[in-house]
Length: 256
Ligand code: HEM
Image 1 (cartoon, rainbow, N blue to C red):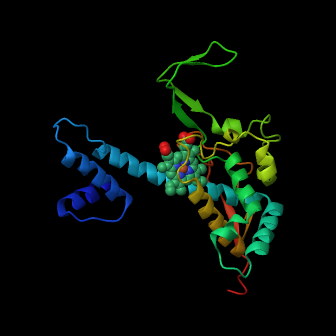
Image 2: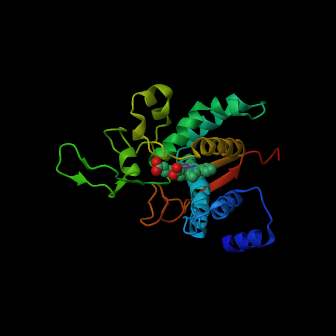
């Protein structure tokens, strides 16, 4: 698909207002402005393809993974589901949805962050060492160029950081409780200058989706549900081994 689109746009000189076009233009700019023949083309075709794929995985699969696990939690925990529905109703009923209204949904925010703690779509982030470092209290030396894997899932399920890690507790993410933990101990969106660029957008879209779903549907476990979740061992993103199955009931059926 990418190859066809790139070829078509280059041949016909057509332009679109999208991410792919930005990259095609950036790549071409380098070629046109280059006076030296061997000047490196920063965005070559492989880079454009890799970035396009990464954006799809980074932007869509992560958000849909969060929503899938969130719905599984709702199905498994009816008390939390009821509390969340009442919370949403209390804050949003009769009002037009807005950014400000979404910001008031603090229990929903805690619910989503707790889902991301127990089910981080990216269970590991990597960094490349730039400066020699000896792990404190050990003789383990990390050399420049070494890849360091940071175990997001391991950190977020560590009982010394999150007591009773297998318990789903949205209140762990109230403003007061968050202040008590160093912020880098929640790593579902990574940390530092290369953390997730889509973090705010992801939280807003997930909140909007949850508001719409909870107003209309009730979720419960069904025969095919597996709880606690068993994870797939392979894969880029965290995934349930046999999928996430729930029973969905339309609670507005009579009115609809
Ligand atoms: C629940 C949803 C999401 C989760 C859990 C998530 C998680 C992450 C994580 C863990 C990283 C790596 C951070 C690091 O290495 O420190 C990352 C990077 C990134 N994410 Fe997200 N993400 C989500 C949604 C999105 C969305 C909606 C977009 C785009 C609209 C996006 C775009 C990116 C990009 C471009 C990067 C690479 C940033 C860089 O290297 O500078 N993500 N994300």
